[in-house]
Length: 352
Image 1 (cartoon, rainbow, N blue to C red):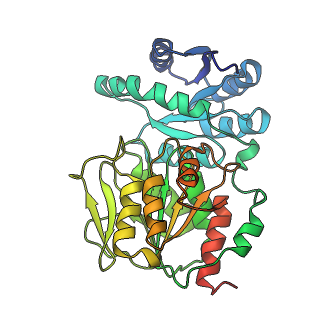
Image 2 (cartoon, one colour):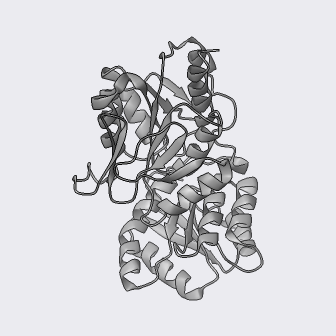
């Protein structure tokens, strides 16, 4: 696609009404156009191969072939950035949406249920489409699980910290799949609390925790204010509130603290809180995402003595956040999520 060419969007949804509204929203956004529509997943696969859109908007529940199966086929035939659009109220659809992300889709967006929701979609959809158009996708959802992209010797040579009691993680676009791969590589009972800031559409935080918990068999929950950051527990920042770690290993969930840029929760806030209370006991990890959130906080954590890492470019859906961190000298280790998890496991095994 030429730099000045409009972003071609394919809409796949069994509702003619939803397709019509999405078509109007895309047509009204500068720099993008609808190149085709499909009323079920099978038609969506055929259209994706024939039209080669830059981005696909994919419903989950459809006749003939659902959005999950359609995503799998598209990723096998013609890997394309896919934004999954589904209802936040239907838990089965939400879980299917996250499985589609695991198979290669870029992000999940809420299907509006009223006029206010569609108004919000009009503002957020163009941003999501532009981010997706920049995303790197891979056949069969293999992103991040392949070779260590030449960085394996770097991991072997790095000086490991003596202990890590807290792992602070920031992620955005493409994050759910990267988080899943990172967590899957950790020991069954890691001697550290895992604290996560994931930028995600409001209302999908619970779905993300349930998906990760069910898939990995780990204790994954939304963080609660005042709870202890205990070993083995994975805690995710709730929507609209910063997650911070304070003295004594206590979690603070703060909805009054202002956003950092446009983000609340913010990875910068999480990393900076760890730098202030327990830097030498913290490993900071910044994963795939658009923008720069987390770079400043990760740099602060490294300066304070923390152990810092980022996802590498080849495995990132969008390399913006890790790139910003590397430019800020916030980290020197860059690996796929699974390899980052294995490196943490090495720390806990004494470097063996």
